[in-house]
Length: 275
Image (tube, rainbow, N blue to C red; front, side):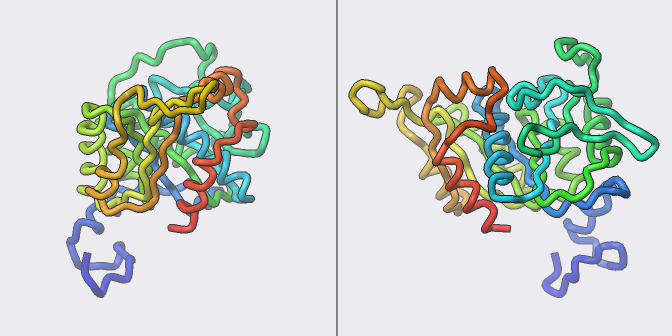
């Protein structure tokens, strides 16, 4: 990007990387005004990415912001279950309308469109990527201060589509202490850097387990690698989340909005200050 860049790529003769990325951006629905888009990524499944997305949205909403979630994990959508949302999304000539959670978080997920939420989605990559684009272009979001996009793991079609098609301001990376996970997460982080998208923070999930009897911390998946990972990317906004069976049970029961996770509350506040 040029030092004299005015961020108006439409009238710019420069062919910088940012101009090429902006050329792929999709227009919002005419009745939407989404100010900040943050994607939540991981290189590997099963590390708690959807949990982190949910908690980011919950605490952003508690701060008084208009908050929304795009569940971009089309073949494994879990957001509606975590929030206890089972009402089907409706639409009109204006577009699709997101479903709101109990606290007013706007949400769109493929599970809100399926006749039976247990039906599998057997689609090829381009069709899945197209559906994610439609969640951006065809949904009437109205005013949104912060939108969180829950991406499927890896560096495939959907993350690439989101990074190119949506004005993503940054990503939150979710990892766990295992060396294998850390290596794979590095791939996702480097993909974002290749797309000129900043990393806003790292969440290390399953970092430790606190014994309810003696209070001692046990590092079941190995010693934390968070400090080394943060140092590698020059990050200061990091958090370690413990293994918490009660939190997992709350997600299963659709009660994520009732949870208190002080570590994520502090992390979210720092994240919002970065914007």
